Length: 135
Image (cartoon, rainbow, N blue to C red; front, side):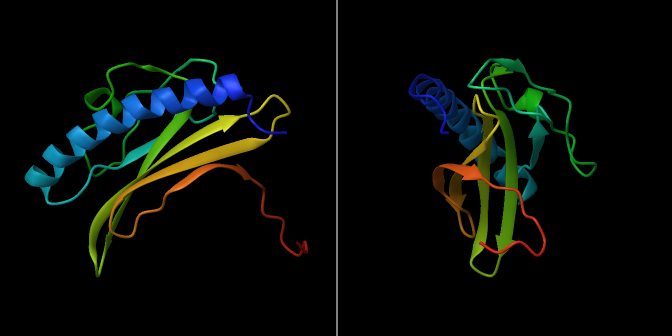
């Protein structure tokens, strides 16, 4: 079962706002630090069907001072967010991942990539990896 249409609208609207805030923050962060900011998954467990959930704004890697509080305007989000940074031979980039859970407990993820080595895909069901299982 997929995410409900009304949930997708709410999720995508929230991602437009989050993506804008993150892009502005990342541009400034890159200029000062010569690398992109990394955002740990928050909240650690995604909400069901885009229900607003308080994010843990103080989650951050041990090698950076800035956390989610410095990045997002709202601490209520309808999905769990994380930012992966990339630095490879072609340059720097980052990917914003959003996670949500459908009514049937299936897990969904969307990726928005910026720059080199990043990934972009629409909402896709995330299936667990089971060693030895054939597709």
